[in-house]
Amino acid sequence: MKRILLPAGGAILATGLLAAGLAGTASASGEIIDTPLTPNDKVSQTVDFWFKANGAALRAASYYRFDYKEVDKLKTAGGYTADTKPGSTAPIGEEKKTTAKVQNVNLPKTIGKVFFEGVDGKLYWCSATSIQAKYRNLVATAGHCVFQTKQNGAVLDKWVFVPGYYQGRAPWGIYVGKQAFAHYDFANYEDYDRDYAFVTVYNGINLNFSKVEGKQVLKSEYDAYEGKKEVKSTELKDIPGGKTAEQQYKEGLDKYGPNGGFRAEDVTSKEPAGGNFEDSVPTVDEVEVTELQWTNAPAVVDPKDATTWKNGDKGATNDTPLTEAEYKKLLDEKAAGKVKGKVFKDDMGDYWLRQYYVIQWYKVSKSTKYFHDSFFIYTGGDLTVKDAGRLGDNVGGQGFAWNQPTGKYVRTFGYPGGEHPDGSKPFTGVTPKWCYGKTSSKVNVYAPLKAEELVALKCAVTPGYNGSPWLLKYSNAKRLGYVNGVTTAVFGDSDKNNRNDTIYSSYFDGETAMVYNAAANLWSGKMS
Image (tube, rainbow, N blue to C red; front, side):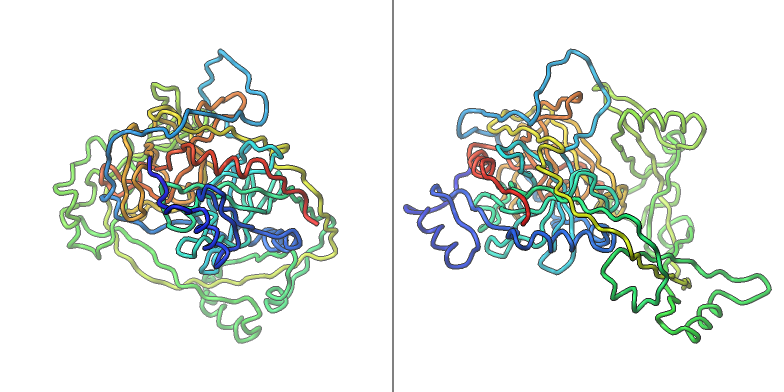
């Protein structure tokens, strides 16, 4: 395993550096950094920031990613060597033994999204999970989803965890981060072999509105209002024998001004082009077809040379994991002719949708659409703030395992929302997805991130999934397992088809356990 590079007296040196420039402390071993996130008197402001305007900030956040595209620099080397004996901490809740062979995948209640403000002032999310801790108040995620890289160990702002997040809703409350723990090498040297973090959180907060009345207002009043509000947008259409959409837009703008909600929006559209590159602008996409059509489609002459691609040539396939309920629903839709792809169960009992694509060239054109927005604010409602209690009491907490052998089956759960390298975007980031497979037995080296011993797992997801837990010995009945990794910033393309097919994690060893133990025994309490 890779050791931290500190000279003799390194713990003293580390502490001195922190005193000089960081709002945190290093452990006596020099391996752990702990940094405050949100002081108690700022918790209510953080909750208000994310919840105001009916969770507008939560919905506005985008997936967090690192733009490292040199995945061809990923190399494999020898196997992993544990630094101490294997160990584990049991999940929150008794794990019962069962002989039932349950094949459908039950999503754990522990997973959710962490939200924060980046150094660029934009709002982002990563995936994360609740994890076992003495006071049931701990979250596990990737280190880059907590600490600002290239910022000398500073933490990201307005950090919160929302388990079970869905479209601006927090079914089990919102949990504000109190204190972040990471390996010193990641926080200060950006060593992605240590891309993990554990965050203590305050008791959760629930905000509820009742007896709310809507009122239509001008845009200026809407912009100034900080309570619950919404926009209802209507696209203007040409009236047969009457005014065009553009005429309606101009008349509305002349009469009501910019506060009247009339707006124009430039849009791009794609129209199928000729049969090959020369007949169109260089814009290519893929069209979904049936398995038979894909099988009969001609192969691309030279996959690396786009000028040889023709309309109808064989494109890529994409496998999406399904729950048992989704599988059964898609089987019915397949029988009704509504699904083109293949719906199947593999030898491991997991469910999949395989989609098939052929190449299609497009010409891109630009046009303008016109809209009329109506602005509403909601007043007169009662806002109640309620202590939601401890995180682990509400959703449970996964166990933790370290120095485990690789080559074992794990399940990962997260919220992919970004695009593949080819620009396709199969996931919305709204609902969680999962992957299942054996981890690599060889280490993976990625020099741009100083990573020399990453663990790999086949998983065709996209950014937003970073921070997602890798669960060893996952019990489908209890929805609990042992966190033995978290998805790092690197997404791999092993078959060079311009689509992610591999994710990576730090190897959880004895030093990971030291960071976890430092966080797992601290009380955080309620907001004041």
